[in-house]
Image (cartoon, rainbow, N blue to C red; front, side):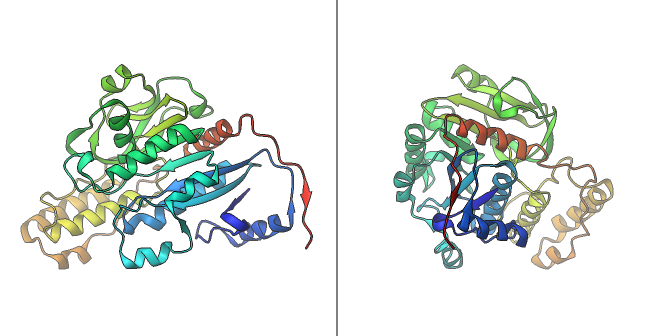
Length: 342
């Protein structure tokens, strides 16, 4: 499998091992028959601290899922998502202008969430840009994946479904059970373990009343994956199947630092079903001290964090993405073998 940018330039990422980079070089000179050539776009709206990790996670999933398909992979970010100068330099030459979507003939699009700042979505600075992408994707893609906040924004824009604020952040790894048969969840063993990290939720009753089909849900975390067939097949993730094992830990440590810096009012809840029992005990003791003293130097005194040995996070993610790519490939003619002069 080869993941490429334009002009057959490989994605430079820790996700690609040296042997995989050599495969990309070989593709430049000799392209064997492929099941399909697909153009995939990633609109990465995650904050600067998670920008590279998010790109890497989706790159790995597409690479694991693609099989014998060749994927031209393009990264974008909404212009209204605020970026630091350092992030802009990092993105320069690797992230395309959002206006390029029209000329690239995107087969499938992935749109991530963003860090919320406003009380309601229409007040977010990126709202107009995001709703424009929702309308564009419905008319111009075969399928689009909406992740977390982007999923909440899409159902609000399309059907007026409002997310509900949770009493406490939903953070952890949850067993999610298949509740309907669908090509997207083919070959996946139920339950699948999926990371969730959000302050808001969508009600099952609101979604089903508006014609959305639920595919997976959790007794603890609620709705997980759901879909709706419009001109494009829209796929919605309330969770984060793309997360790697340490993603929730990074978010938890970030939230602790914000609490100690008095940038948030409440000490963050330990992600559920994530750390081992001894780590949870140590974190409970640390929380008591942090709430009593509440000063930044405490951030360097966190105990050693150990994840549960049976975490198995994102084990089903590559299968979900393989099924998604198969859907995008339906009706696409195979690529004939061609040889390029050296």
